[in-house]
Image 1 (tube, protein in one colour):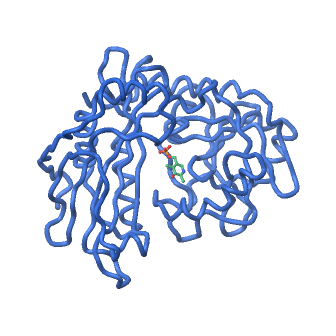
Image 2: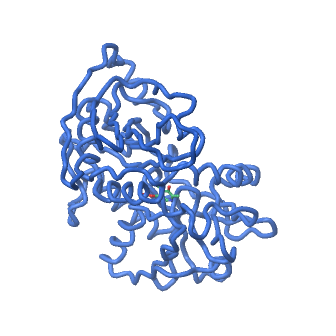
Length: 365
Ligand SMILES: *Cc1c(COP(=O)(O)O)cnc(C)c1O
């Protein structure tokens, strides 16, 4: 299939969509990833036919054969991006080409078929058009979009599947921090790594998340909300959180983040935040950062701010790090100034309150 191939979408409208009042009630308290819209996108793929059968259809369960390969060998990838309602009522998304390209890279690593960017973006446009009423309008709310791809060939032999399917579902989400942006404490895992050298760390695949759940439980047991993983080879350098990248601000204004190591997921939020920092004249360093440098810097004050970033929370300030034999930082410390101001700038762009000088926004409706 050529890169610019387009598919015609068939639409089968839901015969029992939620009522306006049900939807309003959900918008009033959406949580995160709890409620889903009336429709979904599904596209089939086979070795012989390529991508075909593109449709918007009523949201509902998938029918999978118990031998479907994804259930056994975890050939699965996903994406995450948001649709935002702007003050004039129009609906936009943020850098969808970056998600489309990342999904192609993830597909390559997981031996799944590449979905052309045009089809990825059209799938999102189709779903958001069908469920436009689901895009909330209150401050800091959005419609979270979850594209994903699975192998669904009914075959237990171990090889790349000859049949796959791509779906998009959508979930209205409220402000990530209901009571204002709250700094978090992070558990530094020295027992486990999330990804291996040469493994799938740079791919957005469910398997990486499965590997992060046990350390995540340990984090909860230590009153931490997320895990910081160190490099899988030496256990020495910072990698990232289970689902967010990590960024530090030096006292002199330099913004520092671990360089992409092959086992770090390249976040679109990370990329965008680094650009906004550069635009303001902050030196930006992408390099190896040892855990010792972070810990000592937090103690001495050389490292003035630490935050995590990703689509869901945008930016989460990190106040403290805990591990088996140490605590650094103060869990009650307020969020850093640059942290909060970058967060404000990025969310202003996304929600249409500030000019989009980099051309990051794409109108959907
Ligand atoms: C999705 C993800 C991120 C953040 O990526 P964004 O594009 O900024 O949302 C970071 N780390 C991991 C492991 C992820 O899966």
